[in-house]
Length: 235
Image (cartoon, rainbow, N blue to C red; front, top):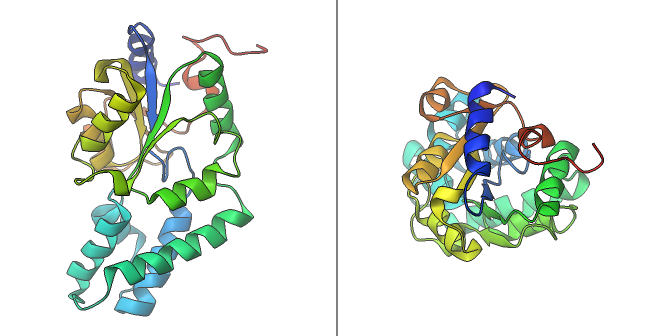
């Protein structure tokens, strides 16, 4: 694990009651390719917009589902479309795709299991809709281990506003300064830091914008993230 990330985790482990908050899309759930596919098909069909990966990363990544659709309408000038209708189409397609292949990968499952074994409070704070989160958690071993989910419906202001992170901390009963957040987007990192939390960005090929704001970076989630501060069961 990169040195800066090790330092962040060492400081976190020394907190009075260390806890963890995961972003969902692209972080806990390795589903950004799925989301890009869904949104690109949706916008091509309904907004006549051939969205590129660069468009998605620059304008939409890290925002809530509703904000993504609203931003797409703004970019394309197609203001007459029904946002809720587009969101319903997106939700249905997402559930179809994750049913065939759960996007929480085995290395991430192992990390969550290690944290849970050590009784580390765990939460998800996401701009995704709660039904999306449930669709993935219900068929994953981590579903029963993460007790707090703050979803799009639970906040009035999405990331980078810290509202969701502070709500997650309150539900966990933990101080913000005792929490480390794993995020994959610039708005997410900014929101976590604004809430007074530690933050580690996750990404195999992080953008320059993400590198510029993240206190530390790791390529992916795995038990190696905590092995120097928490004994791994069976090691």
